Image 1 (spheres, one colour):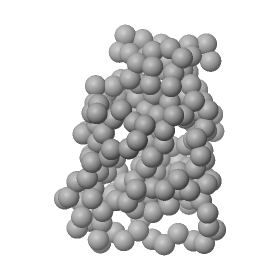
Image 2 (tube, helix red, strand yellow):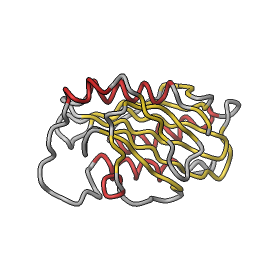
Image 3 (cartoon, one colour):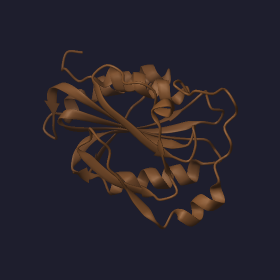
Image 4 (cartoon, one colour):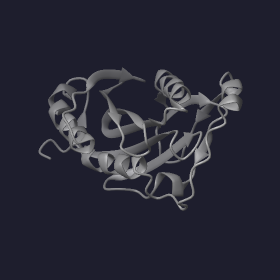
Length: 193
């Protein structure tokens, strides 16, 4: 990539997570306990993970995603962590080192590159919506997954100069409203640590 943005590694990480790679069992996933999670939504918890320079809030009923759930590091990935309800209903955040800084001043120049990587991942044209969360510029995408059935991911790529944060808010139809709400909460409360 000419501009030095290492988004391809992030896309590879999303593929691994979205495809369920890295899981240790082939047994069907138990459905999320939606009733319990709904009651716990009012009690936010703070995301503070080693290797990240960010923090955000998420519903207290969410559980940390273990290494087997989110897989191994890919490319220039320096950290990956997640929280969620189940194997398919979760928020995974990856952190990548970039070879060149991306800021408000040049984020528009990397859009075509980011769109291209996401399009290859999605298997069709993807045009991101410019966003800003926690003071970080970036792009947001909605992807439909072939697995799990009815799966959907809201992908948000944010830039903090020479660091990229790649959010994958992935859900099934049953857990969608809870994941969408948790993802909105995480992005609205995102800040540097």
